[in-house]
Length: 337
Image (cartoon, rainbow, N blue to C red; front, side, top):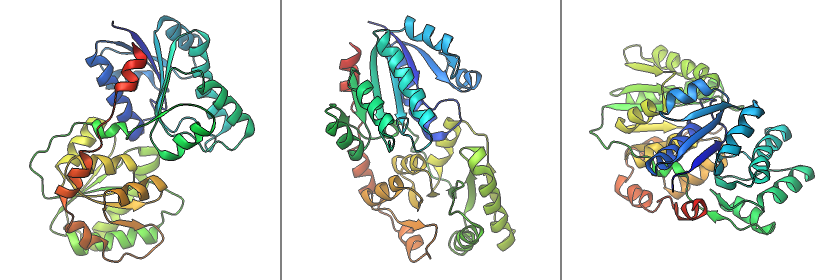
C-alpha cells in the first residue's frame, strides 16, 4: 500500500553527506510509490533538488505537526542527529520531532543514525525513553549499536546508505580531484605541504578542487588553488563551488585519483573505482581508510610514502570490499508494512 512519509534530518543546509543520504532515501521511497514531505531549513532548495516532494520549514511547527498528522510514517535520519556535541538544543529538537510522531501514533523509523556522544544525563534520559518506543531503529556504527543495546533497545547495524549510490563507471579523465574542508587543525602549513606534493607528483594531471559546503570549504579550497598556482602557474586547476550533489558525484566518479577529507567523499571515490587518499580529521575517516586499506595522511604529521601508495592502489581489492557493503532495506520495509 502506498503511504505518506515525513523525513526529518539535517536537510537544507547543503551538507553533501546529509543531502546524499536524503537522496538515497527519496529514490527508494519514490521507487516504491510513496509520497514524501521533507522537513528542511531551506524548503525551496529542497524542492529544487527533488521532484514531486513537499517540504516544510524546520522551525514551522504548525506545518510540521500538520504534515506528520497526515502521514503514515516518520523517518528520522540518517546522520548524527541524536548527539549533544553540537548542542543540547539540537538533540532536543530532533527528539521532539520523533516524539510528535509517536504522540500522533505514527510509525517511527530511526534511519542509519550515529547515536552520540550524549554527555548530559537529561539528554541520555530523553533519548533512551523516546527511542525505545520507535518501530524500527538502525545505526551505522558499532559504538551506536552498543549504546542502544546497553539501554535495552534493539537495533540493526547497517552500512552507510551512501554505498547504495549508483555512479557511472565511465572512462576516467586525466584528473586529480581534491576535496578539502575547514577544520581546527587545518592551517597554511598543511595547505602548502599538500600543494607542493601535488605539484611534485601530479603535475601531469588536471587538478579539480571541490568545495562541498561553501560556508566551510570554499575559503580553504581557494587557498589551496592559490598555493598550487604559486608553485606552478601552468598547471590547469578548476575550483568547483555551488554544485548540486549529482554534479559532485558525476565529476568525482570520472577522476583518476581523489584526495579527500569528508567521509562521504571517500565513499563516492571507493564505489566509483577511483584511487583514493584520505586526509584524517575524524575517527570515521580513519576507520574507513583502514577497512579499505587506502593510504591516509594526517593534518599535523609529515607525509611519508602515502602518495606512492595512492598510485599503487589495488582497485580490484577495494571493489571486492565495496561489494560487501550492500545496504539492507529489509528491516525498514518490514517496519513500513
